[in-house]
Every structure is written in C-alpha cells, then in structure tokens.
Image (cartoon, rainbow, N blue to C red; front, side, top):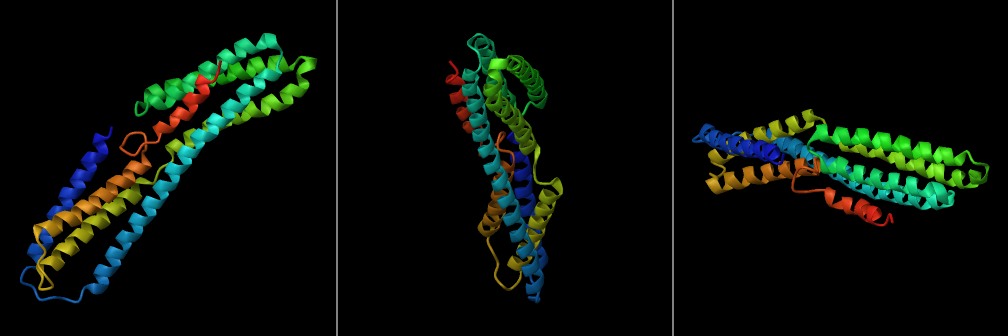
Length: 250
C-alpha cells in the first residue's frame, strides 16, 4: 500500500517540476511585473495549509498511539480483576481473555487488508459477548457481588476502547483538504517558475528540483502521518504494549 502515496507524491513532484519549467518559459524575456501581493498571498496560503495538515496529522498520530496504551491498560486491569471471582470460573474466563487479546492484535496486523480486519472485528465482538456472558453468570452468585462491582466496569472500559480506537483509525483529514493543498502547491510552482524566468533572477534546474522536492517530501510526510499503518512512519510498533500484556496472561 505504500506504493499508492509514493505514486501520488511522485506525480506531484513531476507536475510541480514541469510547471516550474513552464513558468520560466512564460516569464522569459518579460518585464518584471508587480505581483508581490499575489505571490505572497498564494505562498502564504500554501504555508498555512502545510502547517494545518501537518499539525492535524501529528495530533491524530499521537492520539492513535496513546489509545493503544490505554487499551493495554484496560485489558490488563480487567484481567487482574478476574482474580476476584471464584476459582472455578477463572480458567475459562482467562482463556477467553487470551483469545481476545490475540484477536485484537490480529485486527491491526491485517491492515491494509480491510476485509480480513473486519473478519477479526467480528470475532472480537463474539469474544466480547462470551467474556461478558461468563462474567455476568459468575456475578449472579451472592458471594461475588463486591467483586463484580469492580470487575464489570473494567470490562466496560475494555470493550469501549475498541470503539474509540476504530473511530480514531478511520478518522482522517478530508480528501478535499489534500486536494486543495496539492493544487496550491502546483500554483506556487507555476508562480515560482515565472519569477525565475523574469529579470529578478533566472533560477537553475537545481533550484527548480529543490523547490519541487521539498514540497513533495512535505506532502509525503503529511500522508505518512495520516496513515501510520501503511507508510514509513508507523504506529504498529506500539502494538508490542499489547503483546506484553498477552505474554503476561499466564
């Protein structure tokens, strides 16, 4: 899947490089015109869009990472509170917990295969019902009331965080924002090329290459932060926190 953003960014780089060359030809031999206000407005808008999209993607990246830790803590807490139930019901419930964590890990390992991930989510929902059913059955005993007042809220937290993580995974910058950013980058490339072609100073191909490369790289980093399970900047290394919880389930 990383080939998709690489292809998009490569196309954007080539388009910007081509527009710079076009702008240079358009501006060649022309008298310098007072376009500072126009250029300043367009370049300012580009800087604003880059800053906005980068900051938003970084916030979402950090949120997704924190939610992994939060889920690990919720599962670990609920698993420890199983000790409060009668000894005869604990083995089956602990085994259900182990299978549940395995499935939670598989959900995100299957990405970007969304069909396989959805299948794992269905298994997860079934295991949630099984854990809740076994826990509530144990709680009907008169000697477990106090224990269940502690266990059941922990189970609710463990189940609720899965919805929060799913929504966070599916929340991205609207596509129109990326489209607008790309269009503004292309417009800035044309304006930069035009300025290079006028008497203000003729930029070399190195200048054009660096301009297009820096903007294309910025666009790629923003996309990478926005989709941290298919690119170079990844969040899945944090899954080892859940793996540590799973390895501690003896």
